Every structure is written in C-alpha cells, then in structure tokens.
Length: 199
Image (cartoon, rainbow, N blue to C red):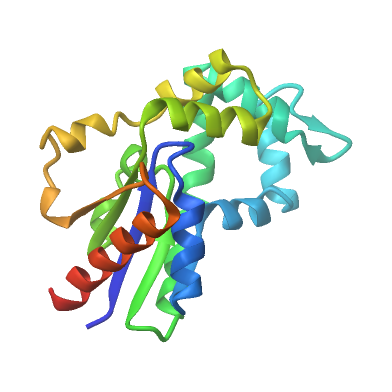
C-alpha cells in the first residue's frame, strides 16, 4: 500500500536537514516551499497578489521580503495569503505525489496543521528542536533580529500541543528530536521510517 508521509515542524526546527537525509536514503521528497517558489513566478498569481496586497509587487515581481514582513506583522494579511496560496500549493503537491511511483512518498509541509491538511497523509513526521536553537537558526537564515525571529515562531502553530497529547490524530505522529548531533537525527529518522514500513 502506498504511503504519504508529511514532514512538518516549526520554523528553524530542521525540516530541511530531515528532507536532505531522506533524499540521501533514496526517497522521493516533495516540498511545498519548492512548489511555492514556482507559483510566485506565475503571472496569474502575481496579479492576484498585487490586487490583494499594496506595495509587495515591484515591476511585475513579488518582493518576497516585503511580503514576508507584511504577513508576519499582520495576522489578517497572513490569513489572506494562506487562503490564496495554500489551495494552489496543496493541489500541485497531491498531483506530484500521486504521479510518483514509490511506495513511500514524503512531502515537506510547513503549515500542515494551520491548513488542516493532516487527513491527506498516512503518517506525520514532526521535527522538534529547542526554542533557542530555532531562534538562532531563523536569525542566521533570514538575517533578522531576535525579536523578529521570535515573532515568526509565535505566529505559527503551537507544537507544544502535540507533546501534551492535545492532538486528535496522535496515532499518526512521529516526533523526531533535533536536539542532538547529526548522527542522532539520522538515527531518529531511520527509526521512524522503520515504524512506518512495519505498520
């Protein structure tokens, strides 16, 4: 039976590292971020963003930094962008996974819980990392202050809910800790893959 496995986790948790290792193991891994990078180049989407948000399209190109600053400082803008982008991204993601011949297909879905897309997947890998390391990772990657990094983290789903067993689909969850070494992370990933293959 074909299995679809989502990879998610908060910003700065290490999802990219997990995906890289899975690819190294020979698995197909699709990415919502990669799909979005394609969508934001499409004329119809750019025009839709220009009509919806003032000042984020310059010379026919979406200013990603301006859009990012807007959505992380304005909850209504963030919600509106998600309403526009998520259906397009998920539709393309599902088609890509269905067209993949592999028995196990992975997909990196950063906003899995926010979008309510859990039911599309047989299993969910949640990458966990301590908050200070996440903050440092976001600061380095995005070139932002600690205040802005914390704001980005707080704008997302509260993953502590999963650890406190407040999540209805807990049987699907595979928590992967990213608080140790690279080898620790690889072992954790392999352990969860083995569980999925046996179930």
